[in-house]
Image (spheres, one colour):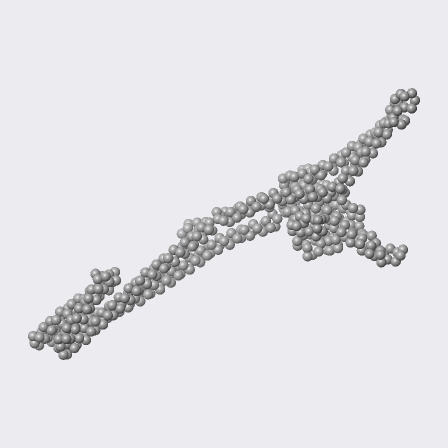
Length: 536
């Protein structure tokens, strides 16, 4: 029994439901068959009871004609008595086992009928003999036969009454058995229904619980593979489908991250071009100076006397060294800019490596430096000894997203302040200038600290921008949700950042006061104490 219950508990939910339905159908069929059999027995018993009642009435008629004959000695009464005795014997022959009756399996009923038949034959013989003695006028034998006849008649009535009583008891017994069988069957069916309801409910609720936990994990942004349940039911298939979906989601998220990188590069293109233009200008200037130093005297570099070529001027070694060193530094500067762009845009697999957080932040600030307008300052204060396991490219994408959003938020509040100042300028008296006529300087700060109690590093990116309304804070990380104008934002940046931070095992949140700026807080688990390389 325990083995069966264990197999049912571990089996397929569909098979369990089908098994429960099959058991229910079998149980109801068995209950219906037993009930129908009892109903047939009651039907036969009622039919037999009716015949037995007729037999009892015939015996009463026999007794009535017996009394009439004993009182009046009329031949009609004698003949009627014998006729009713024959009818009673015919009834007994019809309902006995040999006559097709239903008493064959009932020993007590069969014995009663045989005893009644025997008594009827004895009663008929006595009554017939009494008629003969009555005709012969034998007084003494007639009196003895009368006494015997009365006793035999009483015995017939008692025997018929016993048969009638027995039939009634038998009907009541069948009805009682039917009631007990129905009660037991109903109890068994209720028990089975309760057992299967508990078993199926437990399995279904357990499966729903697993599915709910899996769905919650996916909704929270985790793309880790879900553990497969130790069952062979549909739940395992659902979790396997979830895992396949997670693989596809991770692939699509990687594609989205790469597309977001390219979009960020598009935002940074003009500023980076300006960054490259400065070292190229410096290189060009240094080259021009060297060329001037190497050019012979005179126009066109040809001597004015005799047409002979002039000797090249002597080049100052110190000046040439300085110019070449300047060219070398500017080439390295350009190389670093291009290298940073290439590394940022390159598509790689997600991989965590211990790196110094300050290097990643510095590289990200350098990439957006060209996009920072006048009046906005970026201040980074990250301890150099904070080392975290990071995927540098993806984490850099998070920082770039937050920094670009911060720049745009500060620009938005400065635009509002400039508009308000211009409006105040229009209302100011001629020659006067109201206080606060120019927008205040904006600030973006990047700070980091250890939270040793939680074994985490807390990184904050704060700005003095326009802020986020409280009604939007709950949706700020939703995909395709943006507060920017149409065409200026896709609503994917913070959603992608949220997924990247979750993939690093961390959390990201935001606090904001409208008009006073916003602060994004990233919490990441502490990693290896020593870095294995720079952010590159």
